[in-house]
Image (cartoon, rainbow, N blue to C red; front, top):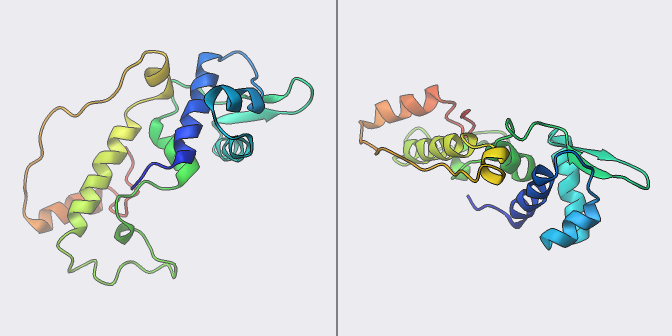
Length: 168
């Protein structure tokens, strides 16, 4: 999974809003200050509004402001608002026809990709905008991985929502 330029821009825009929690900022000003193309910023603004992270106001003093508490909005929520579900491999989700990968049950790598996705989702879900922007904190992994038999790895993955959609 790659973090898109759109996600990077969204995080820059949200940083400006977190740093100015009481005000409405124009999309044009935020875009200019964050070096985001204006038309792209409008698209990002829309995605963040649909996700309930920002709200838009119209008029001469219009723009956007945070509609959610930055102490509760996680990095995972932002990434998924802009890019969709976080998954390291397309084989974890359903294909275009809604069917899962036909090789999933025999694939030796499914549990690896699924557990790696769950670890990434947990990390992204462990940090809020406030922690990143205001407190300047970042999550780090402390601990190690261990190897378990494949059926046990699959069971852990399945119990955690193994479609790449586990909750953090």
